[in-house]
Every structure is written in structure tokens, then in C-alpha cells.
Image (cartoon, rainbow, N blue to C red; front, side, top):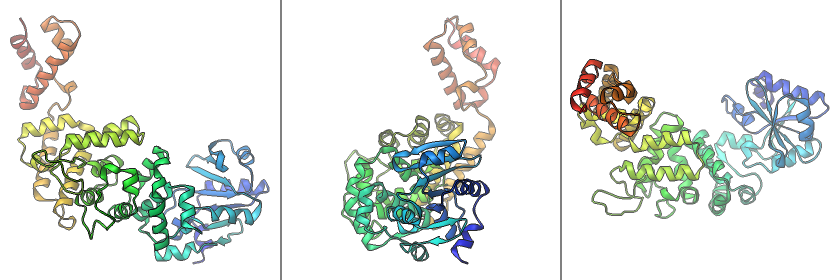
Length: 440
């Protein structure tokens, strides 16, 4: 099917309406970037980007809701009820300006255009052929493209993970050379690319490319194996490979995948002997959570997302968890909290599958642990202190004390006792216990 026809059948109504409004204002308009790439691959397009020779101010005047997301680069975002549509002004009028814009894009698979309403397909750099061969090739000089924006070196890994591309030799050599520019890229941009990479389906391959390309050394020195530039699948770097495999075995949810990537960041084995990060050590959740917290803070992750990931790493299930007593299991569930139970179980199982071999499925002991967790949940023990049958007012009234830290300590002690024996969580029982054990 011709590229023009393929795309025309997949354009959402609000995108068509935006293009028609720009055209009626007397300006040419083209679809460019990821929507065109994904439509040609037969994927559902999510990010719709347009190019036109209309000035940003002119485009903004045509629509009721716009956001000036990149005026320095001539880009604004049109807000519709369904999405944000980015519109970039090309450097000069007409097709000549469009070609100039495409020549400055990162990879050939993102440097194609489709004109509206003519439905002409423009592919000056051979992007469609590269799509067919699964190649990621820099536009023009890959060195110059990466030098213009070093984040593109990490973005290459994202496309390996999300689309299964592989960089061609010239592009990868340029990536290795220019990854040193990553430290000058805003932390938020680095975070967003890593998150998108980790949510892909080819994380193991992408992390391998990023290790050999020097991207991990520049963006995640905590995870850099320091063992040369060979593939970790041929010249093993076990800790990094295990981290990537654990991510691959996890459901594609941001918190659990970040936690999977950071779950074994500790640099010590049992006995405290310091070892290279290239060795797989017994998991040390406390060390790993502290290291994860530093990375997430450096990336300027939101407080809420950061807390979720750090908590998952800190309270992660390990092989030893399969042998916990019911009380130990309830205590761990309480520490993690009801809201993270699913991620907590999924992270533990992903770690187990990555250790045992991805083709073998979840080990039986881990399936048994999940069953026990769900049984405890169904039994309805008070996972949170607020679920006790008594509250702070009861404590103050019976003990005759004012509000303060003592009330919290007493409730915490009661909660520990009820976790040990959930049958104690009855109001009359706890009130009687308070009277006898604390009242003087």
C-alpha cells in the first residue's frame, strides 16, 4: 500500500481538523516524526507532530488552546480534547523549508513527511527503507546529529527497546564518541528517555547497546560495570544483565520497572566485602534503595513517583521471603502498604524469573508466596494502623493522656501485637488490653 494512503486511513479527526485550519489560513502543513514512522510500521500512532511554514505566533492565533513548549525552536502545542499536537515552524517557506527541517532531525526513520491535503510522501533520507530493515541511522552526519543534542544517544536506546531497531555501524560509532556530552543534558530529559526505554519490550538489548555505547557510564555511573566495552551477553556483566532481565520480566508499569532496574544496586556481598558492580551479589534492599533514591533525586523525579520506587526497592521480596512465617509476611505487607502490593509481588516474581531463567516461568515457591499474600489480604488483617479497632481518642481517654508522641507509640505497639495475632483486633479486647497493660 502506498505510504500516503496508509497514513490517510489512520489520521485522527482532531489532527485532520488542525491541519485543515492551518491550510485554510494559507500555509502548507505536513505530518512528520513518530506518527508517520509508527503508521508505516502498522502500529497505533500516539504522538502526532506537524510542520508548517507559518510562524508560531500565527499558528497560536488559529487555535483557542495552545502551549508554547519550545518557542526557541519554533514549536508550540495545540491542545485538543484528545491530545496535544506539536506544530513546528520550518526554517524557510514551502517544501525547501520542510527539507531543511527534516535534515536536522535525529534518525532517518523520524525524518519523513506527509503533506496535507495532497497526500505526498517525502522521504529524502531513506527512512522507509531503514524501517523495513530495522535500522537506526543518523540523518546526514550522525556525529553532528548527536553533537546537536547528546540526548539522542540515549534516545537511540529507547528506539532499540520500543521498536526493535539496531543502530548501523556509523551511527553507533558516532554514539560512542558523543555520549560524553550527556552530562550537560537536563536531568528531566534523561529521566524521561530512560523511563520510555525501560517501558519497552526490548530492554535487555537496549541496555546492552547503551552499555557498549558509553551511555550508562555517563547517565548511570552507579550501574556502569567498568569491564570494557564488550557486550554483556558475550562478556558478562552479571549485575547489569540481571537488572535488565528483571525489567524485561516485569509488567510495563513505570514504578515497578524502575524498581526492577534499581533493585540490586548494592555494591557489597555477604560479609561486607566490596566488589565491582559487575558481580551479582545477594540483594541488599537497604543499600539499593538508598542508591535508587539518589538517582531519582538527581533525575528530579516527582516526590510521589520517587517514594513509590524507593519503597518497592526497600521492601522488595527476596528468596528468603518464601520462608517467612505468616506474621513476618503480614509485617512486610504492612510496611509496604496496600497500594503497592501488586507491584511488590510482581517485582519479586520478576527478580526470581530473571535469576532462574526467563523461559522457565515463575518458580513454584514464588507462586506459593503470592497465594499466601492474597490469603492474608482476603483474611482482612489491619495492614494500616488506621485499621485498628481502636484509635487515638480511645488511647487518650483510657490512659488519660493528651495528644502527642505517646499516643502514636501506643497505637504502634497495638498494631504490632495485632499483626502478630490478627484475632486480637476486636474493640472490646483492645480496650481491655489498654486498660490492663498501660493504665497506671
